[in-house]
Amino acid sequence: MKHETGNEPKGEMKLDSRGSEMKISSCRSERYEAEVGTGTGAEATSRQPQKRPRFVIAGTGSGSGKTTVTLGLMRAFARRGLKVQGFKCGPDYIDPAYHSAVTGRASRNLDSWMTSSAYLREYFLRSSAEADISVIEGVMGLYDGKEDTALTGSTAEIAILTDSPVLLVVDVRSMGRSAAAIVLGFRQLEPEVRIAAVIVNRCGSEGHYRMVKAAIEAACDIPVIGWLPRDSGLDIPERHLGLLPAVERGELEPLFDHAADVLAQGTDLERLLELAAAAPALQAPLEAAAVQHLPGGAAVQHPLGAAAVQYPPGVAAVQHLPGGATVQYPLGAAAVQHPLEAAAKLNFTLETEATADTLNSRLSTGAAPQKSPLAEERNEKGDLSSPGAALTALKETEGLAQPSPVIAVARDAAFNFYYADNLELLARAGARLVHFSPLSGEGIPPEADGIYIGGGFPEEFAAEIAANSLFLSGLRSAAAAGMPLYAECGGYMVLARSLTDRTGAVHEMAGIIPAHTGMQERRAALGYREVTALHDCLLLNRGERLRGHEFHYSVMSYPDAEARTYAYESKGRGGSQPEGYISGNIMAAYAHIHLASYFPAAERLVAACRTYREEKLAKLQQI
Image (cartoon, rainbow, N blue to C red):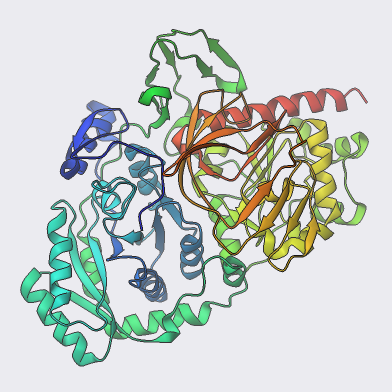
């Protein structure tokens, strides 16, 4: 199965993020030179190559066993006292939750379609800086991606961009020497992909393992360094029915430990560590640029630094200045200069109440959610939404003196689908993130100037959510007050009037959006999405674009008589259609967008929260 994504040109040539042609087989060299550049003087000195022991775990296809191998190896390395940093190729949220549970460190997504190549490399270097070894789990088969004849969005492309050796997992059930033909084909298809070793899965016996090992090594000159037997105890549970809550409760720990035991017994871990340590040093890019995808296929680079952004004629531009001010440039503006700020440097420090690492590790290790400072008071006294109570709360938390707008992030077993770098980019844009747990009975933090509700499994906790009147009434009050409210997928569902779960039970939700959500057994949507704003909204101006991913089993039904303003035109492999909902400062849709696909989106959301904060404080201080 291929990623279901937006359509792009196919063939032997493709466009990189700057719109330049490059050959499929020259992904690393040509794209690296185009986006990273050579650098000179002090700039080059600050970008000295950095060692990052690492390897990619790829499969011959979905179901080959790469997730089992990934989790077992991560746990085996962690047992040795190594700091293991997990990464997942592509947009998946579930495998990173596994990684985080196994390693105790927040796993990160690497996506070569949603983000630029330069951003991906910089993000990998930054996220792996404190680790002893990085393990990058692939998606589907090694060469499966967005396109039929190219590497875009594939594990192979990410292996090339990060210059990582590949550990190939091969399911050898019911085969002997034929396993060598499979490995040989994978080695020859793309010369720049370096398959450094093989692990064979589902062997019938140790004798079977030795037979396929001899065949592969003789034909392919690639070492087979380990094996796993056929073992139902290594099977991963169903992926979409309350899986992350099971991870949070620690129910999968026996599986993780068993996988580690089996791999430690049957794999040459020392040799694998040597292969990882021998990975070439990586050089940081000059700038981690995001790309704005404009109508007609043009691309505009938005760097994290001092470089100018060139806008083609006819494209309106906005310069985002320190302190939240914006300068509108008329149609035809030639360029927008982005001043270099300390906060925009690559080695930035997050100014959040809890960083993405902390949030993810709390979720994955089963630790109880840490409540915001006023959580207990909210639970005891109820919603602190009256002007006097809100002013008191702000004073008690030094909120009046805090210039950064506060974005409240719903974070628990029901709402846990967030790209870690989305949260970091909001912090970089000037927000202070405060998380809260609707499942713990919490309402909206009184210091909030904006709300972000991500995806997850609200259908698994619909009764608990419906019973939390503090949360639902707080959402309604926030929406009525004009507070910026952004929700995607599971968050979108909660903003509707009701949610019908798989048993047919109907649960009342916030009722902010005039629609009803229903779960179904058949998957409703899967695939990459490129979304274009149909109107000015919280994240985008009309015509601006973001990239993301959609995966859900629910459908949203709007009564015919209800007025609806769509948020996006959403394009995937199956075509385009309007999607989502906007009204004032409310924005919700099914697509999980990646803010690194267009950096100004994070700035725009934070600017809206800052404006709301300033207006709120002005009113409160008059009381």
